[in-house]
Amino acid sequence: MAQEQGIAKVDLTYIFKAVMMGNSLYSDNWEKGVLYLTNLNLWFSEGGGWSTIPLQNITMIGREVTDSIKMKAQRSLGTSHVLIIDYVQASSVIQGATAPAVALLAGNEAVINTLKTYLQPICGTPVKKQSLSDIDKKLLYMLYTGVNDLQKLAFFTGADSQTLANSFKSLRDQNLCDNSGTLTEEGKKQITEMM
Amino acid sequence: MSNVPPGLPPFMTASPGGLPPMNEGSFAQSMGAFGALLKIQQNISERFPHAKVPWSETRKFLKAFTIDAIRSTSLYNFHVKLFTDAGLGSMQLISYAPMNYIFAVPNNPVCNCYPALNNQKVCVATTDALHRFFTEGLELECSVEEIECIKNGNQVCKFKVALQPISAYQVMLDEHDKMILSGIRPPVDENGLVERVRVLTIYKLLDSGRLSEIGNAYMQFAANIKKQEKIFDPPWKKQEELASIASTHSTFGSAFGAMTQKVQASAPLPPQPVNPAASQESVRMQEEAKKADSFAELMAKMKRG
Picture (tube, chains in turn brown, purple):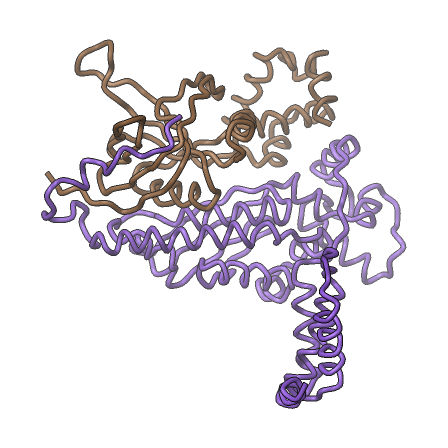
């Protein structure tokens, strides 16, 4: 087993095990403490002890932070700079199995971005695509203006057909448009709010 | 919430020794690399919020159709300097197609931030910085991808920036372009008109002098989406003015005096309590600075004072 040695120490605020459903954050138990980055682990000071996330357990660093999470962090901590770390931990239900968990780190913009850019090549990068919500909005605009030709939509939004199909399905499932791409009353209301 | 850390973490109290676990690069290098990356990110956080460029300048960049023409735009030169100053290396445009740009960074300093990693692309910092500059600084939505990396065995790091057409059109088309797309002749001379038609054709909005299907769809879209253009000076304007002052004054003293006046005139200070004696002294020194023709002369006068 390799010797563990420190690489960086930073003061941060974090939620070691955040409760998230989709893109919504249900935790507000931010803890102010110290984070050590080593060649093997992330060490979080927690109360009177330490908690770790082994780097090899991290599945994704820096997935998109939604506006609602940023706003929550801004309200609670006075900063909107947040890093999401997805990792796996031992399951408390099934012996020998793992369960997904999420840690949120918040702090100074430069520190958060450094942790993100340092760890991403080591631990895994989120799929680099425009966010679906962004495409959803654009697609809704285009449908509103009467553009519904797939080729034109793909050209304008810069998204591939599959992404557009998923986005269209998402809009339809949210009852913002019907099968032909015509906006529902709900969809028109959404557009008015966005504009 | 606990604000007091619970002593040292266990890994720091265990006996030292043993080999670093990663393939190459010592821990000293890794620690230094993290510090170097932090410095780059601090530079980005400081400089990028002040790198907002007016659409009028972005239009010149978008309407340049050769690598040389793009390289000669003020925006491109500002971009290169911004990235160099931030510690992201010397970025150069090496390939271009409308709405697609490939930038190369030889000897990319970001690669040095990952001494323990090899055989993979690592320049997330540059990718993110490019994305931030284009989306926040230029208001151009885009995707950015590192396509080659020195750490992956390539000669240079290369980044592809693909603009989202709808966003590029919004910034690129001015009122005269929109008149052409609406079938109205804008008040420009013949050459200007020919050039605009050429640009609109390259960007697929016109086809054989007529509105293309894409152009038609865009006009349909644009009629409903109003995004206001903000008018402001480009971030390099002050630097250009200072450079111009420096080149027109023969001595450092006179150039320094003129530059001080320029900077003071463009950035008024908030009112502050004034020590009358110090204020008089400062006014006298400013007057002396204006009269002095060289820095040495000014220093001598100040000493005598």
